[in-house]
Length: 118
Image: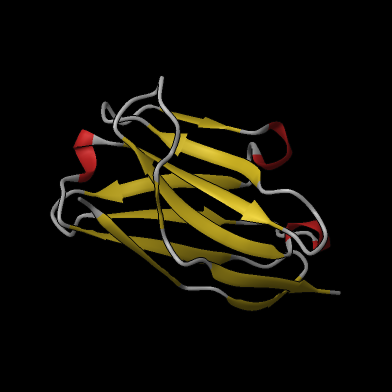
C-alpha cells in the first residue's frame, strides 16, 4: 500500500507563495487519484484539489487560479504550488490518495502546517 509524506509547510506572508510536496512510497502515483485537503482550526477538513492518473486536475473554487497541482513521476511526488496566499489559507494541508475517482480517499499523509500572516 502506498504511503504518503508531506513536506514544505511553513510561515509565509499574505500574498506570498509556498510549495508543498507529497512523496509517495510503495506505489505509483499514476495509479491513484491524488488530492490535497486542508483543515483550519475549528473547521472541517476541506477539499483543495486533485489530480487524476491521467494528469487532469480539478480545484475548489476558492483556490482556482492561485493553486496548482503537479507531479513528477520520476520522483513519485505530487506538489501543490500555492500563490497569492491569503490569511484564510492557513491550515494543515494533507495529501491523500484514492484508487479511483469513485472511491473515498483512504490513504493519507500526516499533514503539514501552512500559516499565512498579515
